[in-house]
Length: 360
Image (cartoon, rainbow, N blue to C red; front, side, top):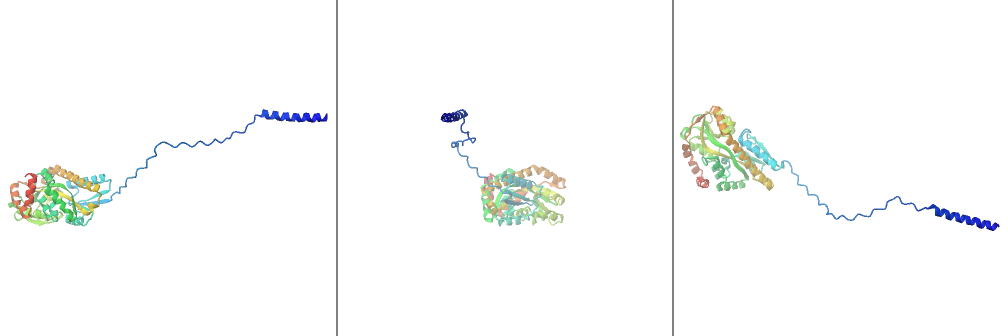
């Protein structure tokens, strides 16, 4: 009996355990961590292009050119220099800086030219007569009655004679950037009426010092007196001289009517002015900047020349209103008197060649 109770109790325990296991439905807990995502396949797109190299930085004022002129800021030529200054700055993004010095602030033209010869970063606007000290034949471009009109003057700058001569300045350390700064025709301003060469006999007339100007004044019949332009007003005032030969804008700028009485429109010179700089300085410029400087020097000259042409009538009016008396001049007599200058200065062969190119 006792054995039966033990067997029954054992069977009950077994059945209870089976029932509990079957009814619980228990499963292992799911992981709360997401499985790692499979690696993304390699992209089929082309690799990004490398960044473009940065453009070299432009250094402001890396190249500086100091431009000297004897003229004032009111002169049309100076306005052309301002165009040159502005255009060079714009086209080089300021890398080439043009500095302007009017009224001979850097000294006489001759001194500035000498500075340019030794490589200083200076330029000067000057005439053919002064440059004849280095290339003698170049003085012909300032000789009397070489051309008769502005258009003929521009044609002159396209002749073989001109191109050959400007190439000779490099051996003197100089570079002609342009020579198209037309300052007008030059006339006589005197203290007595001058209608013909005979009226100049015994009169002292200021010369710039160039041989072609001195020879022309003397061929006209006057005595040439070499003086800086800055001294012309005072010399007339003090009767050191009795006359000057100069173009309208310079006469107005220097108040010449205050110290002279008569204007004789001889038109003996068509005044060409050029811009000359140091060959050594020019050669420090990158080729691109060299081209820009030369092109804009010419463009500045074109602007200056147009200003002169536009202002001629107004300048003449100002001179006459300033008290000058206009003299009726025998131009043919002055042409005849000055023809010998070409022979005296050994320009005759060159003059004939230029006349042929100009179709004269």
